[in-house]
Structures are given as C-alpha cells and as structure tokens.
Amino acid sequence: MTATVEVEAPKVIDGLPAEDYHADRTSISSSGLRALLPPGCPAQFKYDREHPATPKKEFDLGHAAHKLVLGEGEEIVVTEWDDWRRKVAREERDEIRATGAIPLLAHEGEQVQAMAEAIRRHPIAGPLFASKGVAERSIYWTHRDTGVRLRVRPDWLVVRPDITLIVDLKTATDASPDGFSKSIESYSYHQQGALYIDGVQAVGLAPEGARFLFVAQSKKPPYLVTVGELRDQDQEIGRARNERALRIYADCTASGQWPDWTGPVTEIPQIGLPTWAVIRQTEEYMQ
Image (cartoon, rainbow, N blue to C red; front, side, top):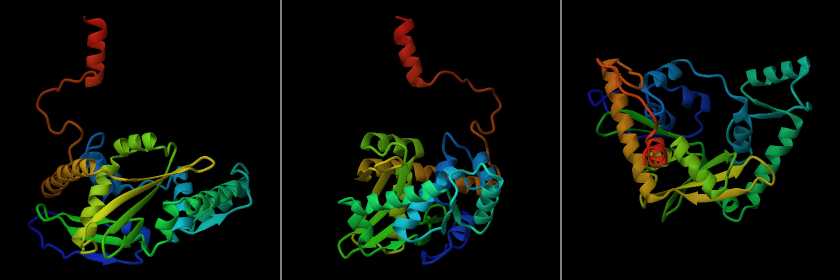
C-alpha cells in the first residue's frame, strides 16, 4: 500500500484470533519491517510471507508461558509423555497441534507452570501483569508519509491516566541485562519497541505518552527475570530503522520488484571481511 490509496482510520480490535492477526496481508507488522532490513532483504520477506513456516517446537514453551501469564493465546495440552519417541506419542502430539493447541510433554508442563509462578513472584513483573490491563490487543493505523497500513499486538497494555505501559514478555536463553541487551541488537527489538509506542499513540491510547517495557525470563531454573525499559536513544534508532523499512516496503509494493541483498546491479560488487575484522587483522598483520 502506498500514499495513493485511501488512508484508513486507526483501529483497535479486542479478541481477534492470533492466526487472523498474523495472516493479514493488508498491513505489515514489526517482524515484517525487521525482515526487510539486513541481514534480511525484500525478496526473502516476500517469499516467507507467501510461504508461512510451520510452527517451530522451540517456540512452544514461550507461547505456553505467555498463555499462563497473560491469559491469552493458544490452548495448552500437557500430555503424559516424557518424550515424543513412541509413535503413539507423536500421533497424539500431531492431533493436538492440528486443533491449534500447543502439545507439551509432562516435564514441559511443569516447566511453564514454574516459569509463570516465577513471573508472579517477581517484585516488578508480578504487579505489572496483575495490574488492570489488556492482553493481545490488535492495533492498526496508517503511516502518514507512505500510506502503509501497520499493525502491532502488545502482549500486555496498561492504560493509566498518567502513562500508558506496553509490556513485552520474552523468554530468553540469557535473560541477564547484558545478555538481553545483545538480544535487542540481534533481533532488533528496539524497532519493535518504537513501532509499538507509535501504534498505541496513533490510536489514542497514550494521551500522556507511552513507555515500552521488556520482561525477559530465562528458560532454565530458577527462571530468573529481568525487567527493563527501552532507552530513548535506542527507541529513536529503532524508529529510524522502521522508517527506512517502510519506504522499502512501499517502493517494492508500488513497483512489484522485491530485490535480494544486492538489488539490481550491473557490475559485480566487492565483498570482503567485516569492518571489525579488517581493523583487527590490519593491526595484527600489517604493522
């Protein structure tokens, strides 16, 4: 969609099924914008959108933890099995998944219960999720400069008279402050934070401003939790990345051309070491 199309008004939808939200092709989400920028590219984004991948098992624990903490999401079915090696176990697993639910092994069910309890006991995360809020609210608005329709779906949205809190729950291999900081860079979570703030403000749910909070939880016992707010500087960097991705998306949609990493070129581009490796190896071998 480009600025030549009719601009739709901002919209908030409660209770929209997750599969309907993710299947929407008239708008683009934060994950889509991130996929358009390196190390992704428009061609890969287009293919992945047209050929959705099957759910990955490694995401099951995170989705199940979301369900227990937020009260929204796919249903959880805890089986009696210790593993999926037996044919009858695999058949039951596949039947559960075919209904749209998340199949868990017995020990996985115990794990997500312990993770949810660790969130509830945390002195900051517990009160955040216990406060009056709405889970999985679908928000749509139109980008003013490009006419691109955007969407976000905050995990937990708390609207207060003085401030609006957008709370994003993530499970992580390393939930320490330093470890999760690396995840913000690796997965461009600062783009997500900026877009969610913009979306919540666009639909009028943050008249006094919004704050984006991460609740990162370790996937190993005792399921430690880090709560942190996205820094203003990182938010602005994420917003600038979103702006570039939006223009790429608008241009590709208008032209019908979805280039790969190098785009249409007439000459073979140079390729070599990463900049950091050039600096290090120059100092080590060329002095």
